[in-house]
Length: 215
Image (cartoon, rainbow, N blue to C red; front, side, top):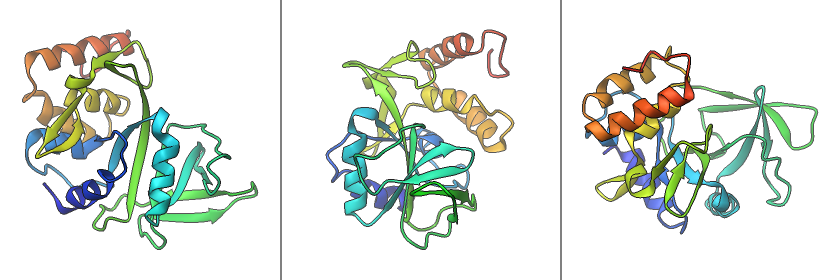
């Protein structure tokens, strides 16, 4: 497990909220090795703990921005003045080389540019918020697509990560991205039959007109 995961997990487990690594890092934890360079650290969390997470990250010296679409971002300095337009927030340290901010006319807003060159220092982390019921993780783009929590969140050396079928479902929206295609090719072959079956059913519901990953 790479050092960025270890460092970030040491911090996150102090927060008292639920979380799981997602994206390419989660695929690597499932595979058991680092398959490619990753642009940043992605964390799956839940909407009901969003404010708690923001306060925690701010208390640890991170700037927190929420995305608004169109390259715009809003800095969250007052927890009571959030826009909540998108499901992701970005937390980064001042001077982080992965992010550049540009002025914008709206109050506390800016234009934001990301540099996907591969993260080497623990100075950036993205949270993506999801819903859950008492027993199930609910897929953000269709809450009728559900997976039991004990199947949705797995562990590698005590570090929680999102199951590969869920990670791949999120990646299914951009199969032209080379890293996403690689993630699918590597993870799908290692998944159990029931995990493959769940993913196939979810893909068919989400893409009734067909999808390149439907087999």
